Structures are given as structure tokens and as C-alpha cells.
Image (tube, rainbow, N blue to C red; front, side):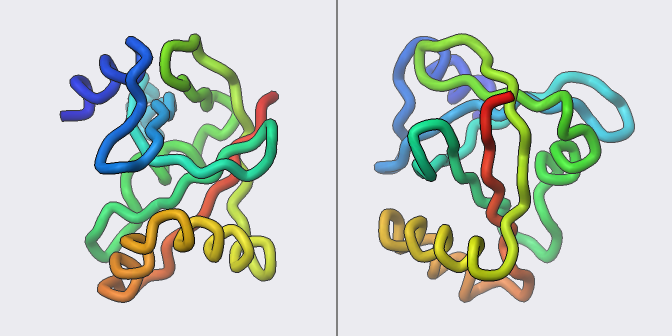
Length: 129
């Protein structure tokens, strides 16, 4: 599924279930092998994107651990464009709350996902390097 969605984004089609999708490129925290993860994204500003580490379950998704372990090796691919190196910033406090409000206004399903989880979903701001 990830590989098929990545091909769609790379060919210029970046929508899934009514959401905009990007490809997050990371490296494995232990293996250091390249990883590609299609993720929904939300505009934060003209030059920043928000992503949510939801993914169900009682722990954060693997891509989140990989991103935090090697933040200097992250990049994103937007539909039909090449990779852009990014710096991740995990949002906390008022910054996270403001971003979360925008995310759930755009996609109310995230509020439903969060309500079913016993962990608080991290919100990550990606800015170009």
C-alpha cells in the first residue's frame, strides 16, 4: 500500500480519502535503511507542513521514531515534485493546540481517532532546510 501510494504522489496525484498526501523520507533508526511513508499533511504556512503521528495502536508509528532519531536526514516529496530536505519540530503546548484545531477543522476524523487512543498524537511541523 505504501509503495503504491508513493508512486501516485510521485506521479502528481496526492489525494487519498479526501486528504492531501506527501511522502515522508526517513532512515530507519537502527537499520539506517531508507524509508518512504505516505502521510496526510496540513498547511501550516507558505513554507511549512503539519503531519500527525496517529497510526492507531498504543505506541507512535515507526516513521515517527525514525524521524526523531535522524531528523537531519528527513525530506518530503509533494505530488509531482522532487525531494525537499526538511527539519521536523514536535509541537507542544499552545503551538500544538492551535495546530490541532486547524487539523481537526480540516479533517474531523482525526478527533475521532484521537478519542479512541490512550496516547496523545504528536503533531510535527516540517520546515524546509
